[in-house]
Structures are given as structure tokens and as C-alpha cells.
Amino acid sequence: MERVASKEEVRQAVLAARREDKRIALVPTMGMLHEGHLSLVRAACGRADYIAVSIFVNPTQFGPGEDFETYPRDLERDMELLRAEGVDLVFTPTPAEMYAGDAHVTVAPGPLGELWEGAVRPGHFAGVCTVVCKLLNIVQPNLAFFGEKDFQQLVIIKRMVRDLDLSVRVESCPIIREPDGLALSSRNAYLSVDERRAATVLYRALRTAETLALGGESGAAVLAEAMRECIADEPLAALDYAAVVDPATLGPIGALDASARAIVAARLGSTRLIDNMQITRGA
Ligand code: AMP
Image 1 (spheres, rainbow, N blue to C red):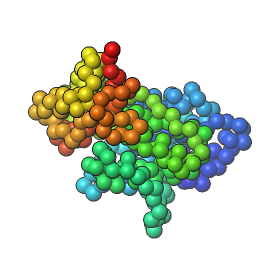
Image 2: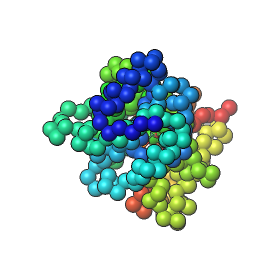
Image 3: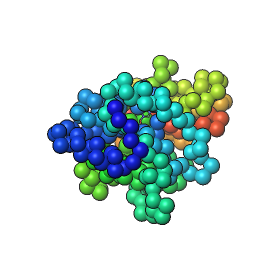
Image 4: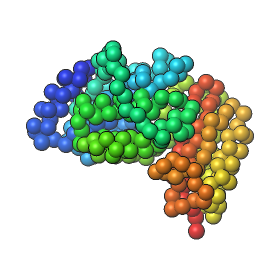
């Protein structure tokens, strides 16, 4: 496994792999890897011959006052985990390597970037789209892997690839959870013992909506209200949003269709967590 920090070295390494007719996969991450990230790496290993993983805490997707400086980092441990998975290339650029000092051109996510996470974190998805577009241009993979954990991000990246005619296939992977349902996230490391216990409320809220839907409830507003009540019952959690939305447009729906997505965001102390689940209406 090779670790490189410059775009040029990535281009050279990938070029050599491509000359050997290898199918290239990219797994973009911000590091502090856990089983969720590794599930993407394993999916990539199953579909491609040359696996590149990027580890870059992207400053442009963090807003003022967010956790860019304190975001957990452990490159040595990450490298060990990736070596064990048989990854070929790890790209660990600095912000100065990624962005020219006077870089001003960005990728605009459009209206999807204004909803939900975008409403709470203005500019977040412009930062995400810009860095993902750059990573795709640097690595030029055949396939790129993203987790459903960040469902809105996944939807926006699929749109970006379609709307900008980027030459890559976006593959999505299911959410990996702790045994008690909490979705794995690098930010879970911030939680106190009490907050960690309370953090399962996001999963419980999603399961409440799922159970109601399977029982025949089809009103999206009813399901969303049940999720809000669930979060309100947890004193350590403060709700940002809970909704059941169209999985393609992330917009509101009246009644449950073939499938819908329940989405939730809440704060446990100073830690913001997000989660989501596919919701299907029962007979
Ligand atoms: P991050 O390092 O948080 O930017 O995440 C990198 C990639 O891993 C993104 O595509 C995430 O959606 C994905 N990911 C993070 N947590 C999980 C999880 N619990 N299950 C599946 N994928 C995840």
C-alpha cells in the first residue's frame, strides 16, 4: 500500500494501474475510520482491482464555529486499517495541496443543497461537491463509493455526477450501526457516556416511523410527528429536524409511496448527529 500526499503522485500511481487494465475505485473519507468506512472499502474491493482511499478533512465543508479544528484524526490507525483491507493507494493531501490560495471556482449543489443539512449548515454541500468533484478529477476512478449514512450527500453527489456528466459510477452502501442501533460516525467519539446512551434516540425515532408505516400508517406528517415526539422524550437530545421525504428530491411527500426516506438530525450536547432509514408502507 502506497501513501501519497500530492495530486501528481496520485495521477502517476493511477495511470500505472490503468495501464495494467485495472478497474479503479475511489472511497473518499475524512479519516478516523470505522466499520462504516471499511464497509465501503470492502464493497470497492469486490468491484474493482485498484482501490484508492482519500483521507482529507475538507475545510470548505465546515462552517464557522463548526468542528473543523477538533474533528478527530488518527492517521496511523487509519493506515493500519486500510493496509489490512488490501487498499492500494491512500491519498492524504493537505488543504494547501488541495486548494490554491486564490481558488474561487466551486461546484454549486443547487436547490437540494439548501434543504435539511444545507439549511442548518449553509455552504456545506458546496464544499462537499467541490471537494468530491476535485477528488474524482484527480483520481479519475471508474467507481466511487459513498455511504447511505449521509443520505442527502449521496443524493446530491449522484445529481452532480449526472448534471456535470462526470465519468464515474456512484455506488452506495448501507448504513453500518452499533448493536444498539446508533449509526457509526467519527463524531460519536465526542459523546459523553450519558450522551452516547441517549444517542440511540435517532435510531429509535426512525424505527418508530418504520413500525407505524409497516402497520399501515401512510401519512408522512403523522410519521414525522411520531419521530419528533420520540426525540422530545429524550431530555439529552435537541431536535434539528425529522421528516419523511421523497428519496430522489428530498422534498415533502403527502402519503407514503412505494418508498420514502425518514431523515433525522439532533444534537446531543454539542455533538450533531444525523441518521436516516428507508420507509416502506405495509399492506
Ligand atoms: P466521512 O469520513 O464521515 O466523510 O464519511 C466517508 C464516507 O463513509 C461517506 O460516504 C459516508 O457516508 C460513509 N459512512 C460514514 N459512516 C457510515 C456508516 N455508519 N455506514 C455506512 N457508511 C458510512
